[in-house]
Image 1 (spheres, rainbow, N blue to C red):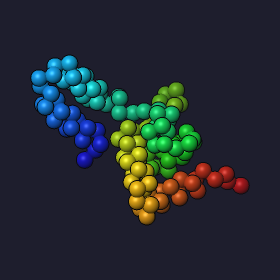
Image 2 (image 1 turned 135 degrees about the vertical axis):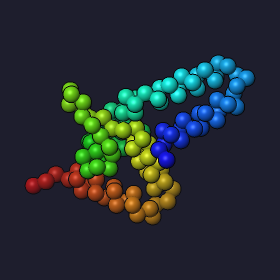
Image 3 (image 1 turned 30 degrees about the horizontal axis):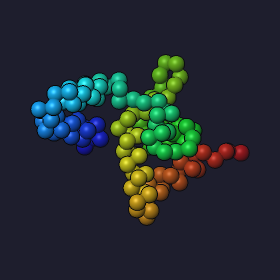
Image 4 (image 1 turned 45 degrees about the vertical axis):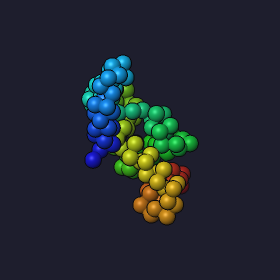
Length: 120
């Protein structure tokens, strides 16, 4: 299940619980409307860098180029990344910090590190 779908479902549950608190319930409705717009499911490299907790935008670009993150280029040449992929990768990185023997995440980081090395 996608992260965005999980967020929508949790917001539904909170909205039901807050039926008597109209201001908060309306704010949740506004957030749900933002999530419903597919154009808002794409973020820039700087936002992705912050969410992923990496030190360089170049790392984000390398992950996108290697296929670890779903990306697209806008007509102006800017790179955007799919929010769901970034959130999933961020969650995986947090899991890696908690469970350092997580081989798939370590392998992905190794591949990205190799792709960032300067080539002769």
